[in-house]
Length: 414
Image (tube, rainbow, N blue to C red; front, side, top):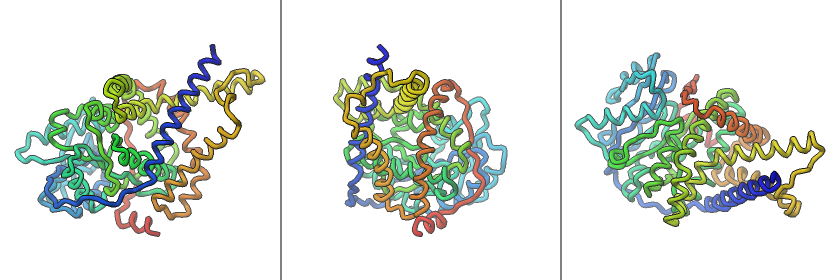
């Protein structure tokens, strides 16, 4: 019975892996032709901030310089349970609104956004769309122009290109950078090219106001971005990816801080998987809808990681303590070169993504030596998240220095 279970699960994981790899190939091609529209959409730009006095000023200055008519967007910084000078700093900028919220019981970005939207609906001024950033972000000057283009083309939910502003700070920030470039090119762009649903990334997001008012926010889990994506796709609304609307996010410098952040993501991911996998899977089968099927698979990515770790652990125990192999595996029925080809293909895709994205820094390519450590660390983090998934405590990632857009652009060009 154990042999049967092992083979069935391994076949299932192999099929999912082959499916994801095949889809990723669609991201190799980048279409250049785009329809440009004159600025017609108005935006409420929301910035979620909790004790962000170090970095919030740089973002506000960045947003004030966007290449978009200044009278067509307003900036609202959500000072959520702040005990520092975040609100004071924001008030120092003319025309920027510091919106202070205090609720120690309902903490986290999802709750802060839900509160801010309710406050926004009370105001006499209305907006065509809502844009969301994190306080440690920087936005490309053309960001709102790109959102305007997509909205004019009929998009209702848009995700910008997530980049990192500090990939050279440490080996862990370099790993984040490699992951971002890979996901942008071989996950997000591939799905856009195939007219499937893209995934929201927590920042650099744009939503049609009418849609938010109709659906309500309602995304208050630890991964509000994934939760709202699942809700949209289940309603037949596919978020779209804008490759040219870049947002630069600051990543943790240490492995410890990174692990804490990723643990929160995985805990929230388990919650979303429980809520949305089976409804999305059923609708995808009933409607023969590939986008919903793909989204259903994405919600259970956390379970595929968990199962891979458990199955690998069982095999290692068998080999180490019982003079294995005593357990039948799927790979015993395949030629030996298949496993080697799978490993090589998995490694090459990351290098391919860096080349396609035009990454020139030799330090990033050298960081691929330690990149497997980052990848492997997802397994114990996911297992720990599985057993602590009911922990809804939101953890704040602290930022210790200021990086401005000019520095990021200069470093990328070198």
